[in-house]
Image 1: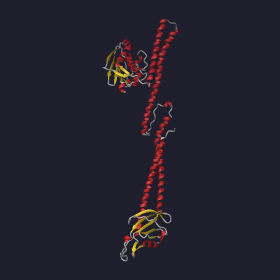
Image 2: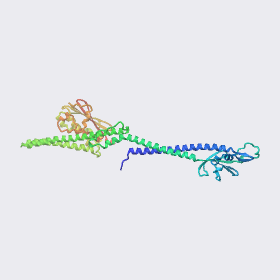
Image 3: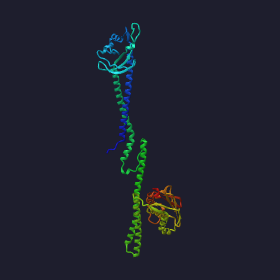
Length: 479
C-alpha cells in the first residue's frame, strides 16, 4: 500500500480550502453587488413612477391621465415606456402605446406603498416593475363637485426592461469568475512554491536517511538551519538514537572481542600445559600437577561461559520472577561463609552493621548472584589485612545493602565509577589480581538488579575506599 505524502496532502487540502473560500467569497460579493444594482434600479424606477403618478389628475369630476398625452407628444419615448393604470373599482384600464394589447401584471400593497417585482414585457424580455395603489390628484374643487378622491383609487404600474441591468450583472459575473480563477491560479502557484520550498529540507533529510549505507547508520544527520523547528527537534532526537546505535554497535564489537580474548587466555593456558606434558615423558606426580593446572584453567573457562550464558538470559528473559520472602541478613552471612576461606588467605576481616528487620519479597536466586559478586569482588580487591564493612538499611518498601572495602592504587577520573558496570571493564590494578575475573560480574549484577526493580551504585569517597550499594524493593508491596 502506497504511503500518503504530507506534501501532496498539504497541496490538495490547501488548494481545496482556498478554492472553496474564493468561491463562497465570490458568490457573496456578486450577490451583494446584484442587490446593490437592483436597489439603485428600483430607486430610479420609483422616481420615474412618482413623476408620472402626478399626472393622474381629476378633471371635470373624472380621472384624467395626462401622462399618456405627454408620452404621445414625445413619440421617441412612447415605444419604450410601459405604463398601465387600472381603476380599482371598475377595472377600467389605461396603458401606454408600447403595451398594445398586452397587460402588465398588477401587484400592489397599501395606498402609497411601493411594491417592486420582475415581470415579462410584451417583447418577451424580463422587466422590472413598481406597483402602487394611489389616489388621483385633485388640484381644485372647481368643476369637480361631488367627486370624492378616496372613492376612486387607481393601481399604477410602471415597468422597464432589465436588459441593460442584466448585461451589466452578466459582465460583473464573468469578471468575478475570471478574476477568481486568475487569483486562484496565483494562489495555487504560490502555495506550491511555498510548500515545495518548506518541504525541501525535510525531503533532503529523508533522502539522506534512505540513501545511507550500513556503515553510515551511526553517523549524525546534517540538520540545516532551514529545517523547520518541528522537524529539527525530531531530527536531533533521531541523531541521538543514531549515536546510541553506534555506541551499542561499538559495545557489541568490543563485547565479542573481549569474549574472544577472555576465552583465548584459559584456552592458551590449557594448550601450553598439554603441550609441555606431551613434549617428553614425565613422572606421575608431574602429570598430576599439570592435569590439576589444566583442570583449574578449564574450570575458570567453564565459569566464564556460564556467566556469559546467564548474562544473556537475564537480558532476554521474559519469565516471571520467582518471588519469596527473603531474610537478607541470613543470605549475606551464608554468602560470606562461602568466601571465608578466601578472606582468611588474604587476612581480610568483616564488620557488620545490620538493621532490625531485612525481610523482603524478591527472587532469592538472583539476589544471591548480586551479593556473591559484590562480596567476592570486595574480598579479592581489598587491601590485604583490611576490613570489609557490610551495612544494611531497612525501609518501608526496600532494603539497602552497602559493601565497603579498602583499596590502594586506584586512580579514577571524574565519572569513571560508572564504567565499573560496563561489560569487561576492569580497573588496571584489578587486572593484576589473582584469579579469573572477566569483568562481567558487576555488569551482570546490574542487569539482575534492574530485573528485580532495584539498582546498584558505586562511590569512591576517598583514594583508599570503594563502596557499592544495592537497593532491592519489596516486590509484593510494590505491586
